[in-house]
Image 1 (cartoon, rainbow, N blue to C red):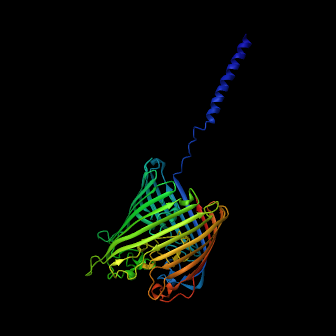
Image 2: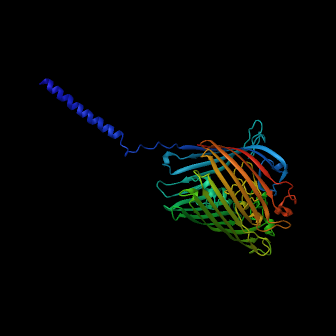
Image 3: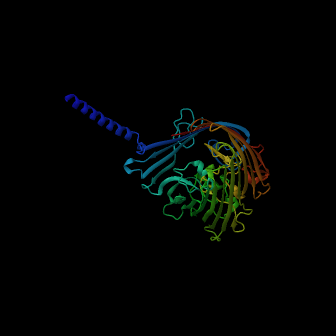
Length: 526
């Protein structure tokens, strides 16, 4: 009896243990109970490293401009051809993102800096874009971003305050890739830089995005009415899974009266800066006084079909942007209504993906901007205005993927091209681009062959309409994720546009066609 009782107790104990083990086993493998995500770090780092070795026949004749060249080829930056130049540049761009857990992610601080240099340029000094000399020791850290992002929990909106990116795009550039801004909306051809201000980004519904922003371009004297400010309003909606449509309205209130700007170049419609950047400038507008006031508006729309090949092999996009406004002189007899502004820009592209990856594509793009033959002589300015009249560089159109004829955005210290601004000095431009690329080894080795043609819509005095044509080649090898090595080369055949003494700094046609060869190393760090 005693033995039977013992056996019974053991059996009950085993059944109970088995029951407990089964419950633990079921609980452990229960996939419906999600394992919590690891806690995000409060401080994060993202870095971008870029090294470029260049061989070219483009260089400035002004020795003071050897280190950093921005602006129109053969323009006031004194760039010319005929003498081979070789150099190596590097760029390091670190970003720090701080989101303290005590605030539950509601507030995020972002800072972005830049260290640029040419190998062997300078040491033990103070100044941007230098520090590659023997011993180094250069103070050259440049602030690009310093802003606070307020995003309440579960809110469909956020506000960014401080020094931030100012793009011609509805998307928040703090969280959207730069490549998206280069290929959507206005492709950074109007605004693609940094500025101080406040931005509101919101989702009006699941398909519709909105941006409202105010940016102080120049304050000048705080007690005077001499400021320059920019307002931007943008909306974009996904009408169908493949179709996006957007509308945009921007406004610059310019009371700077030529004060402020970059060093001695100044800023604004009649500044040396606009001429330097190849934008509509003082010589084209012929404003009779250095002091003026302007109201400049941009109103436009854009659309995209199957952007980024998200749902098919054909990707098309287009935009139209109009310039409206008035220019009033100050302190002259013609104080009011010196000239009205009306210019138009059109852009469209078609991309066909024939292979496995997004690099297996054939791309065609066209650009048209209106020009003005007589400037403001008829009280009307019909050329296109961009942010390049207020900063350098500010409009960085690069979706075309040309290297010399239009700007190449992969640069460090030397950012120049034949058509640096889509306004083309106020003459307007027609740009045509055709390229084909292929991933020889998918997501590993990419090769591209490209071509470009630029036609000035208004011929300069003594010159023709053909700015030039370009052929270029690129190969890029991805060694590891986000670590790539590249080779690219381009040759530009100059047209009769340069027969005009009005378009070169020395009033002579350049004797040699420009060409470039690049070796690149790029590393995106996380």
